[in-house]
Image (tube, rainbow, N blue to C red; front, side):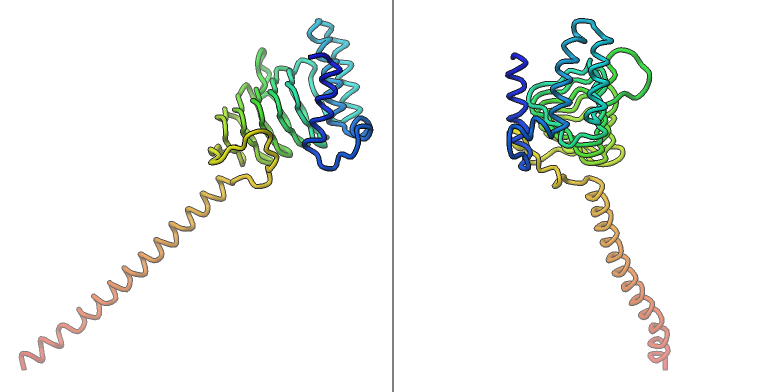
Length: 234
């Protein structure tokens, strides 16, 4: 796909995912996420031509302009939308699929100083919420959602939700077709574990009450037995 067609597709993507977008001029002038993607495509072109310094200078300019840091070596697919985006960092060996949505403060980074592939691979139709950290050479499966503030250090299968620190993985019952931005209704595995523990504690308390009541009745019977024996002997 040509660069101009990519620009048109990226603009359409903004309108599809941000109801606040009013006009093409506004999108072109006022959306730092779009600016970061467009400038990255230029930087990535020069990176592939092994003009590394020029590519880094272009990405450096983009960081000052947008507050979004994308290494020119990162591979970014079609219709990727960075919403707000300030503080977002995308590392050199990151691979991002199509129709991915990334919110502000997200880090797609490494976990050390190792060489080679050291950043995550993000599948298609993935939503990564605010301040999520996806670290290391891991794979996030298609149609998955990463909850706000989560720290993900292991592979995530397709059609899953990840929430918490460290991220807990849970399969989604009804994975949506197409882009699903309803990330504020993510299920919370940690909350579910707490609720399960509360239910178990409640059941144990009921069992203890029943046992205490039974022991109390046995004690009453035991206390009354000698008096009945004495009465019978008289």
